[in-house]
Amino acid sequence: MHQYLLFSPEVAAARSAGKPIVALESTIISHGMPYPQNVTMAQEVEHVIRAAGAVPATIAIIEGKICIGLVAEQLELLATSPDAMKVSRRDLPYVLSQGRLGATTVAATMICAQLAGIHVFVTGGIGGVHRGAETSFDISADLQELARTNVAVVCAGVKSILDIGLTLEYLETHGVPVISVGQPAFPAFFTRDSGFKADFQLDSALEQASFIQTKWQLGLNGGIVVSNPVPEAFAMQKEEIDGITEQALQEARDGGVAGKLVTPFLLARIKTLTEGRSLMTNIALVKHNAQVGAELAVAMRNLPGLQPL
Ligand code: PSU
Ligand code: MN
Image 1: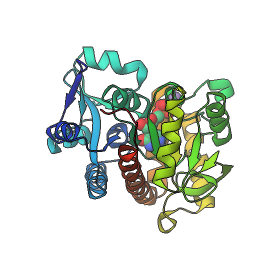
Image 2: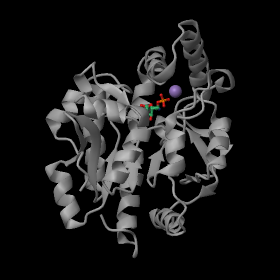
Image 3: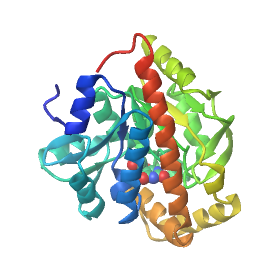
Image 4: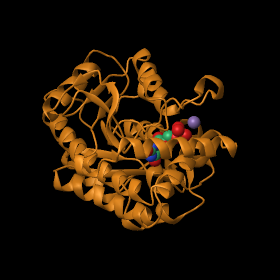
């Protein structure tokens, strides 16, 4: 076992019993949502995964260890600590060697999940190519990670704070397949249709699992994006979210917000500008993704031939 990994009792037991495990990120808790909704969301998402027959493993960096699975006090700590660092690939050695508290992004969670032998990871939205990236060079490290690390990421697509078309181009260049669930369209997080199509529509967990297994059996390293639209009842109006997104982007430009602060800034502004409605949508879509991800993990566990943990 890797020297930096520390499994929670629940995840350790799941590993011994050969149960399906689903990884969850922690930046969404510390930098993606306000307290106390963040900790409630984290608990509810874990509950959805257990109810669907898998075991949740929320991942974070605590006291020099990569914690795979968090107990209630650790979830609360991440949800309430303003000094929790947002940790992507670049930041992992710093936060571990300094013993700092770290919340993992999609990229860092993929790295940790792979170290722990977990194949399925559920989140809300992935990072991507930012609008104006031709001058800012702001492209999330999540995309590079999807190009190289063998973890399937279940998400609700990417937010329109990003350039969705360029994000999909980037993924295509790097050979990252984008699957959609239940519809041909690639979803845009708060809304169900980004105006772009996913590469392949695969509705059942069994088809998704068999696609993923085939990719890795071919030696084609890298992740898979499984994009699952927000449930209809919780989707936002495109016109409303587009206007608010423009305003938040303008404020970020005016304020000179750059680097890793951009995404948390935009998420917080959108929440305020929608008077919290975006937060309800965000929570609903993560729970929906948890259901799809847990079913996928169960299906992958039942396929013959996938590497055991
Ligand atoms: N998008 C969301 N919510 C989030 C994030 C993205 O809708 O919480 C977080 C994820 O942890 C993602 C990270 O990996 O932001 C991307 O940040 P950046 O753009 O700085 O790479
Ligand atoms: Mn960035």
